[in-house]
Image (cartoon, rainbow, N blue to C red; front, top):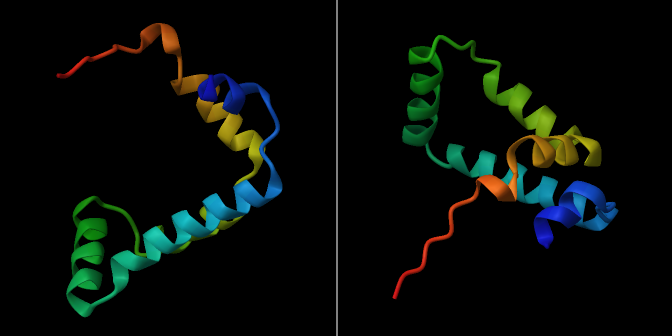
Length: 88
């Protein structure tokens, strides 16, 4: 039911802002220490990316629109391709 809501119903502005803030905080928390910073930039270098990668990622997180979420949901969240796993 939630997947269908994401695909078809409007996302309240406050929820969208909460999501942006969460994602931005998660990204920025990867740079809490000098060792973490070195590790992130090492990954960028070894992946062949430029050092503006994280800046662009943050800019996107702070500016994505409701329609961007809807497009990703429609593309990747297809319940007919889900596999249900029961544990217990």
